[in-house]
Image (tube, rainbow, N blue to C red):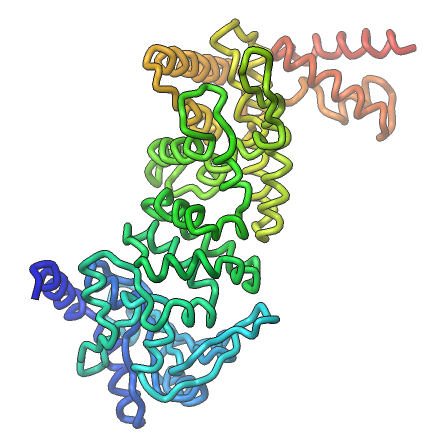
Length: 488
């Protein structure tokens, strides 16, 4: 037995020994009722990696109805929202029947097998009759290990522990059969590469290459969830490279591999694809702790960093002298980002935020070449709104030049911009710039009722506020009356 395996087993013993007594009690209840119960999947894998899972997943020989009856007695609350897939959940509150400081949450699923009809987006569920059969239908061997409870017997029919020690993602059955049964497992291969830093086994990788188009049968929501988990993982670059290199990204995020064809205008990177991955890495490094301005992992920032240049393929132009330009790629890219994220069923707020950051990511360029007025700084802050801290990080990350002098110059320029923003913040309420007069005051001064003219007057005063800063109510009133008289 290798030293790596021994180390994993010792680590797991410590974690499994610390399983909540409530979970072992649940095993006793299932055994007393004549059913098998085993801890499965991620919690077992994580135990060998020295991690404690907050939620516990179990598999059982009991039917969903039998499981629900047992969980109703064991838990303080239970739910059957996944019953059609054989899953019943329950929670035991801390401080009541449990001595633990936090609740114990479990999900118990009847042994099963899943497969997809070629014309359907939903898996067909058939219940199985053995733990080994249930483990065979799981995505990878590292997730096909189990611990029977309450006796704590380790079950590993597909050598998942060996693969865990080697850092390899291998399917418990032939990968073509596994991916055909559930094509989303191909996305999970990329996600686990990002989360665990594991390599996809050659046979599994080859199957993904050959079957990538099969992902089309999976709903956009399930693909979105896997992509999101990948992006907020510890090493998203590794997962994205799996998606692109296998051709899977061509079907779920085609704008990303398309960037490989575009030469970056700085001629400092192999292609815009590689540049985008570098921007993502830098943006992640600029995320903050939970009390900071952009607590990591931040999905919006990471999506924006990855996708900020996807407008370049459509805007590429060859200039006289051999140069390349991508005029207005930020505007085109913002539209492409919105369209792709909508197709992936991201929520409206995320779509709007990522598209807006894409649109604004070039706004800073030129700041170091000429002095911005206070008005320009105000507009920068106002246009970014609540995305300003993310925009700071995206803009800084977008500088991937290997020219140290140029990089230092850009960094210093952005330092100066942030300092000016801070200075203006002390003098003005930059985060909520409003005209010096509100709509009610405008109507009272001009003798108007609600309508288009009030909106025009408000817009005029807002522009004035941007250009000149706070005027005060009296000066704003004079300016408003002069503007109104000039319209007559």
